[in-house]
Image (cartoon, rainbow, N blue to C red; front, side, top):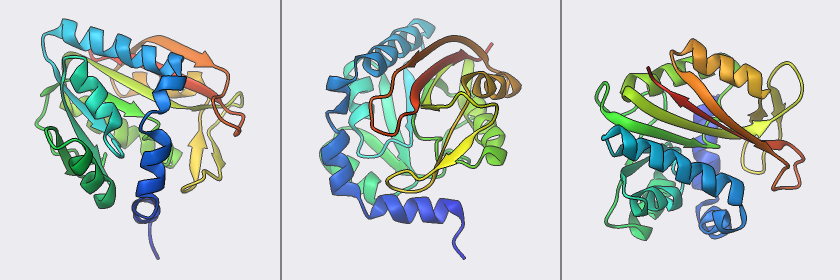
Length: 209
């Protein structure tokens, strides 16, 4: 039987062109997310370390946005088809196929990690290990911006995402997991949904001391 990573990889491999056509310019109509990414980029530049990983980069549109904001950004994705598309769409940028739990990055190398709705498919019990890997690659003072679907309940809720099953999270619980990984959450934005799913959209900024 396929594990959830294999299922996620296969599901995204099968929707590359549709996904890219739907999301390549999506932030033009999502001002909250766009401005949180802009704030993240400004803070990363302020660390003096412009190296940023866009994990779960998909078709590479946010990697390119970060590059345009003056960062040395590269993308990582589980789906080989997504990575191939990103390389074609943005040939000047670097994209690699890898698991978020095993990033091809040296310890303490990065000024920032962007996880834009890329951790939503991770089962709750596996999320701490994934966050620990992100902490491993961040330099002291480095930033993580995590975006996800939020719920009002006390625990994560599994739902039928259009591509493959996903989870929505209580914001306070997600912030606790960030703190448990050694990060200091210091800013959050919670706003009405941008889709018909009905979940709130959440963005958490955290810093590695």
